[in-house]
Structure formats: structure tokens, C-alpha cells
Length: 81
Image (cartoon, rainbow, N blue to C red; front, side, top):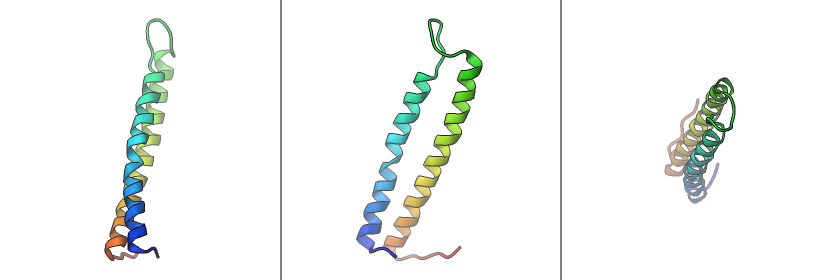
């Protein structure tokens, strides 16, 4: 059980973590793209696109869900599973 101020701050922090995750995702997509001059072949690039998309989607969903739970706790709403 957290104090409401602490839960509100952590909720905002969890929501703010999404932007660097999206930036890292964009950087990894740019690095793993195939080009005519260099880079990976098309099959490896597609496999890495799918893997990075699934990984970052899961991380973002968990982070947003945790932020919402902390926000609810800061408001005093408690839900039991």
C-alpha cells in the first residue's frame, strides 16, 4: 500500500516510460531495415520486425496497465482480482 502522492508520481513515471520505449522501437526498426547497399536480408529483417513489435507491444501494454493501476490506487479505488 503506497501513499497517494507516491502512487500518483509512480503512475506518471510509468506513463512517461512509454515515450523512450517508442523511441527505442523506432531506432531498432531503422537499424534492422534492409537497404540496397547494406543491411540484413529481407527475411531476417521481417523476423526482427515481428520480434521487436511483439516485445515492445507487450512492454508498453504492461507499463500502461501498471500506470492505470497506480492511478486507481492513488484515487483510493481498490479492485481485487
